[in-house]
Length: 264
Image (cartoon, rainbow, N blue to C red; front, side, top):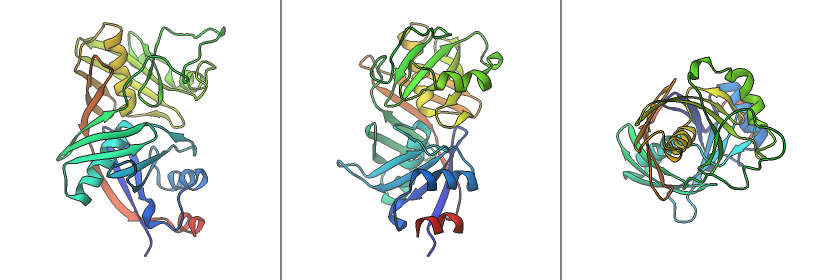
């Protein structure tokens, strides 16, 4: 029987979920990229048996075939996917950023991300100037958060790729443009590493909330308003980050024959 692909969405992000246990071999950068090119979406979430005591493992593929350490919206999708199969509300997900705890309550999922840091090996300032005031945040994956007066006016389509590949980010970076509305709300646009501009980014929303709290312009919890929807982020004094938001299945379909043949 041809393996199934499930298309899910969360706050405007769309991902393809594939259970690696149904495949003859794991996905590769080439097959993951080909799957996105044929079926659309913001990437592929490759699922497998849990490791390190987790209920399920998640591998995150970007459309360009690169991998990401974290995906906030994808984490919520996988939590609900696993909850339906295991019949339990509490789900733990093994990722490259660690084991993430989640709780599923219908279409609303609460997910813990990796503790936030404002420095680390993914951030290496050099003598080359950086063009914008910013805050670096890692929640397992690297983000540069840039506050502006008007997120809609920022030239993200041209600046996004330049900032993603800036020399200060040895592993590239996700780029968040933010405008604070009040102490508990901000607007955001995002240029995702390996993807481009997307309607939403869960880990980016977490990074934006962390940056706003760290710089004293907002207080937790922070509602992050994205083109694709809203996410509520709690930021702890210890750097802990908890995200609340939706996740829902759109459709299920058979793995396209062209991709199936690549895995045969």
